[in-house]
Amino acid sequence: MYVGFLIVSPMDSGPSLSRYVKKAIDAVHGTGIAYQVTAMGTILEAATLDEMFRAAEAAVEAVKAEGSQRISLSLKVDIRFDRDISMDSKMRSVGRS
Image 1 (cartoon, rainbow, N blue to C red):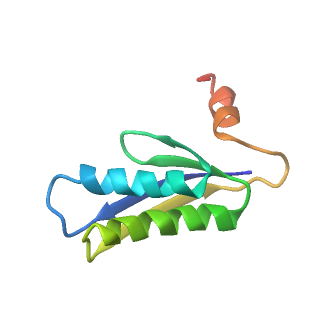
Image 2: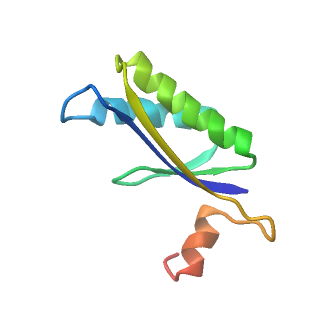
């Protein structure tokens, strides 16, 4: 399992970004992977790295379709090979389940 943190930001759209964020979240939802929206980005959980990248690409394409011509993408992925991880296991490990 891969756990990531995704931030997709249009860079040419003024101070209010909520309509773009909504479209990006809808696109991530459409990929079928688990996700959790936070105030500053979206946590992703995917079985493969390809799924993680597809969700990021879908979010970018959704923001582009909404009219943005310049987009900043940040994707941070936690990859462990010694054991399975998930959003929940990461929260439990710091006592925040």
